[in-house]
Length: 246
Image (cartoon, rainbow, N blue to C red):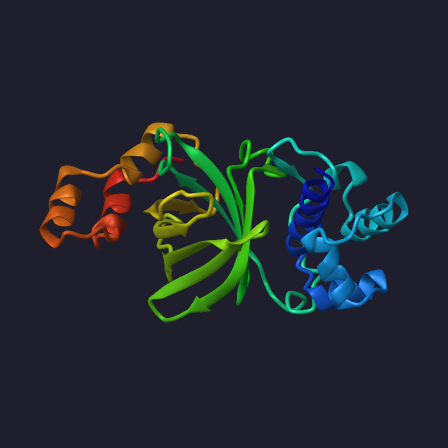
């Protein structure tokens, strides 16, 4: 039981460290501890005393309770470029909408903050106005080309829970686009592929979101013909035809 608690606390320390843009090296300097000691904290190899927990909470700018609670959802100030690698980046902010799910498909909202070569995605936020409460945090690298941007993201709590996202390099006049997403999860769940709708501003029209994301009969015919699921080329045209709501 004690080891489980230590592992949970360590996972939350790691989660918030990544959310703040800190590497192991930069955060160990901030705490005046070695990287090996910090790694032990995050793996749950060490039972932390209350003084050490308070020091870590202050360094992460979160209440100490955030390192101890087990509500299933995270709550913290959003990512700020404090880490060494993030300091020189300009960040873009996108609201993400999806209806892909391991259970019944329902509308889920996320927030993506993307820099020139790093990105952080706050999955399943409460709402566009309450983005500081989220279920999962993924962060990782960004690779850009003339035609697309690819994100390689990892769950802050599970290294093996990974997500790859491909976004067209240009959003167009409507400032929104469809992204192709693949998730390789943990916990016995199978890999899942689907689409996200990305927008620079919140979209309030739920029906419009569903019309943009739901598969059409033509989509299903293409999948059957190729015996594969892929991001079809007409997604961009679909956005144009739907006419983005104000």
